[in-house]
Length: 400
Ligand code: AMP
Image (cartoon, rainbow, N blue to C red):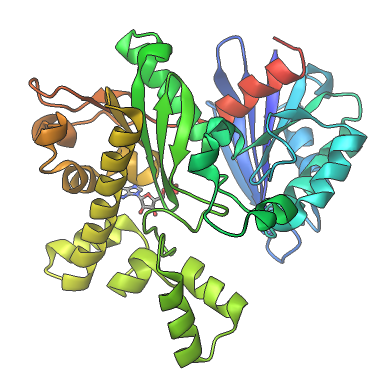
């Protein structure tokens, strides 16, 4: 059983072919700069890596290059396209149109068109990616898997905003969250690792990367998450402000002569770690600069850590206690300094980090980093969003 996972961006297309018997990656890669000059094709198998410039004027060409390479007699990993049993497509935003992963059907593609502007950069790209795959593999079952999907178990008082109710009814303005596949994956992995039934666990999952979100998971289900209607909400991120008083944004916009879309661009692209530090959005650069005594880099890291700590505290309250805190994604998996800043002085909650374990995690493996006398388990778990998409594809397409 082999599932192809496709993650389409406006000018990119990431792919992974996964063997579901072993849940191992047969081949993966990226088509970059689609529709732009110098399009770049990357293809990796356990045996070799190919990177070359190929003209890719659109996603159709990108998909056909991916399929041709996967089935190539020399470098391919399958002998024909018929070996691909299903295709899972990552979709960023679902609105309330899709509360579950869903089969690609003509009706569902109409619904996809209707929710395009919920994520204007990403959702149209997903549609293009689906269509490109359908053109090459019209008889292969395909599934739409949404980043928001895991969060539909939130109760109404957690997902509703305190605004005019008619705007929820009319426009479906509410909290949707993001990184759902990642939160789901690491919560399940945590339960497996702890050899506990997930039904019995309160887990706080911290997906900390360039974009960051924190989720409260009770009995395997999301009950709250820090991102909102869009990924702009929650903790400060690489370039996003996270939560802010909207009156402050309006004040800046008025003083600096920005209109609404310029303000949103400012909050999404010029704020967060980059805005505060003036150094970089990348935590490696910030760690470096902070070590060299850069006050604003250190401040940015403290804002991030304090914001994350507050969400952990809030979700411990929402969950009525926490058994396990999980760190995942670029920063969560690789930045012990940030984990340490976040978890400092949380003994009241039964959270105590072991600094030695924290700085000696094995990359790519699950690490347990709490002190022996910590009541709460603290785990670092590599995320695998593609695997979740592939698993959901098997279930929804009835391939399991
Ligand atoms: P992601 O969005 O999950 O791909 O995470 C990307 C971010 O992870 C980068 O922007 C870096 O800030 C951060 N990151 C990756 N590796 C490290 C590392 N070794 N130390 C600190 N931060 C890292």
